[in-house]
Each structure stands twice: as C-alpha cells, then as structure tokens.
Image (cartoon, rainbow, N blue to C red; front, side):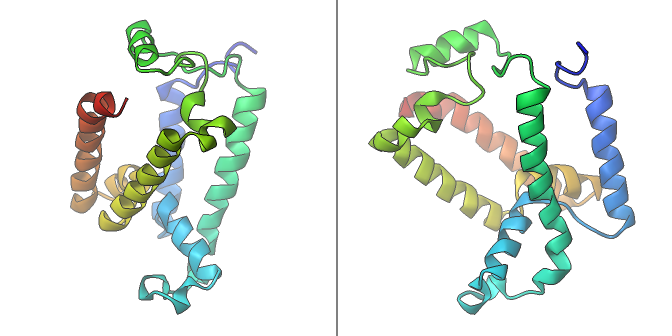
Length: 185
C-alpha cells in the first residue's frame, strides 16, 4: 500500500511511457496535447474561420482519448493515490518562493496565489495567466507542437525539429525561472 501512495519511480513510469510510445509508433500515430486542442477547435467549426483548422479531424479523434485519460488519471492519482498533495521541493526553493509572495509554496501542488478563485480578482495574477496562456499557445503553434508532443513523441521518432524545440523549451524555462520570474514578482 505504501508503494501506491508514493510517486512512481522512473524505472516504472519511464518504461510505461516507452511502451505507450512504441505502440503509437507501431500503429503509425503521434502523440501531443496541442493537437487535441486543434482537433476540438475543428470539431467546433474553427475550420470555417482559419485554414489551420481545415483538416480531417475524424482521423485524429483517437487522440482525444488522451485528454479524457489525463483528466481521469489526474483525478484518480490526486484523490486516491497521493498521500500528500504538496510537491516535494527543496526547502531553499520554498523559502525563495515565499519571499516572492507564494505563501503556499511547498504546501500545495499549484500556488494559490495564481490558481485559486480569489486570483481571478487580482489583476496581476489574471494578467500573468492570460499573457502566459497566449505565449504558450503562440509557442506551441510556432514550434509545431507542445512540450509533450515534441519531448515524448517527436524525440522517440528521432525527429531533429523536436530536439531543437525541446532544447528551446528548456532554455526558455531556465530564462523564465532565473531571469524573468524574479522581475515579475
């Protein structure tokens, strides 16, 4: 029972991801979360407004299972397989984040200062979420996919554009955390 309430170690989770990727490659499919958003937008009629959404979404509807699985799996993991919902992070990082105004650092999975209902009334938190969402959407479109698509599916297919995109994602993350994040907060 104790094993179930702990994060799965890399030697369990890694081979499971590799198995899923092998099956997808074997079936000629590619995985990615941003492609699901494109499929949903096309299903809702976005193909009438922009040519980017003009494709046969029915060929991609199998990938919508990923969204359902992520939501159900996340719910099960959070509510039934997790002893403590807080992310185990370095105490120095907790101190730094608390110094920046994130009092829930080390105690919650997501910072309440950005992801609570009260944050929707704070102009700074709301603008960070909106601008961040737009930048992520723009970046995923410009890179031709999201982090999960490039890092998991693209790299397993040995695609050079995915290697370049993943390198850019990591550099962008480092720049954000070490240079921009302290300026914003």
